[in-house]
Image 1 (cartoon, rainbow, N blue to C red):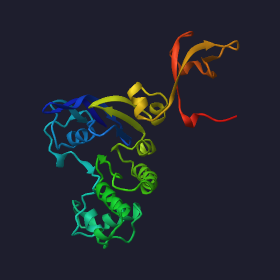
Image 2 (cartoon, rainbow, N blue to C red):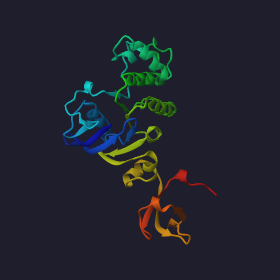
Image 3 (cartoon, rainbow, N blue to C red):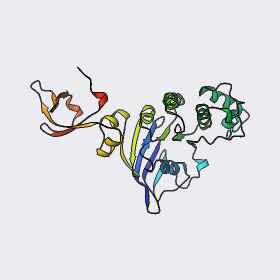
Image 4 (cartoon, rainbow, N blue to C red):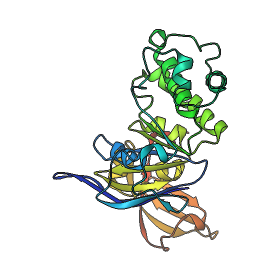
Length: 281
């Protein structure tokens, strides 16, 4: 398991990370979302060992990685631009960094699993954007990294292809049982892939939780606005004649199970009403 403890990083007068802490369990996919400049890529660089924090630490299975060079961490990193070697075939790109006499067989097997069977000899410069993305993913998965970090891996693709590959990428990460941190600014992509979503802003963690809870119950006003429009409605917690607890508002009352709410009876509450939650009767 990866645990990050109170990471802080500055670049001159710019605070890139401020007391960032979280954990990623084995086999879990965590997506990190937030606006440009919120510290997402800096976070990956520190975890990968490409940069050092001003304070804080990164642990793997309770062992500090402070001072451990990048190549000894056993982590993989996939970039938005794929960073494929243009003079190598798809198979050679995937086999690069593998050792042993069976590395090309391993490359062929991984290419098949990402939907590129028979592409071993193909020139990567002749491949489409989606095919190049798959080659880059196969290369990242081939060494079986303890942790795979993906930095905007679908950012260079058009919307239709991104939507298609989001589902495929989620299925592949589950199939491999791959522990992963997935950085993106695209909310649809993030919520479609994640087991856990972490929302960042200004170098700080605003909220962490499963996709449904983060979307339905934003931790604060900034997260609500970042995750999309919605109407705020004032309400009051009340107990009905049947004993059920509900939220009374000017547009109706919603009965809700008591265990979902910590507000006391009579307490004021703000409801977030999103368009997809409204149906015409």
